[in-house]
Length: 119
Length: 113
Image 1 (spheres, chains in turn brown, green):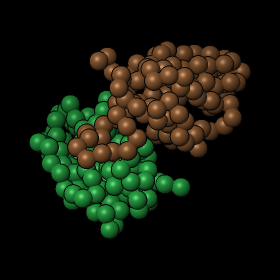
Image 2 (cartoon, one colour):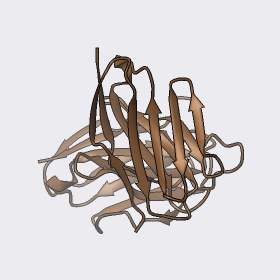
Image 3 (cartoon, one colour):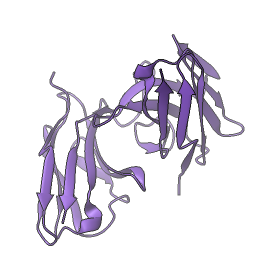
Image 4 (cartoon, one colour):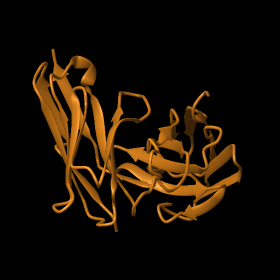
């Protein structure tokens, strides 16, 4: 398996533009997580899905942020309109399930991240 | 809300010395505590984890300890090598038995040759 695949790897855009980040989780994984990483705030959990259903979006900073998972192999994180303070690395991660079962490795598999710069 | 505090933020050690990173968490229901290593420009990757029914776990040069009463857990790296240089993140499950993780702020470890 190629692992979690994210695109684009880098995006530079101007304030006010719409940004769409994409993620393909590992096949067979039922849960998907979006994290944002900045120097100031570290790794923040934005939203997560289980079986394509959003479970908790309390980490989404503002209404400008939205996420979807139309099927088991694809998710998007959208920012509209973007602002300079949205500049960060956005990671998508997937896991076997939402609840850790006995014998599970417990590993959250991260993608390579999408580095967003909003000018 | 749930919170994980991590110290120190930076740590510089001589090759061969030990490194210790400490974390505290606030959610009493947390029972899964992984540690992730992130090399520069790369993704975070799991290096070791511990569950609340275990007090200590070892994997070669890496060990983790957990004190559930005090809500503390620590990462110990012995005989450090330059390739151990990276940012290390502790995390605690949000609630019990969950992959939903709250991460600490990270520790930048530098191992000087």
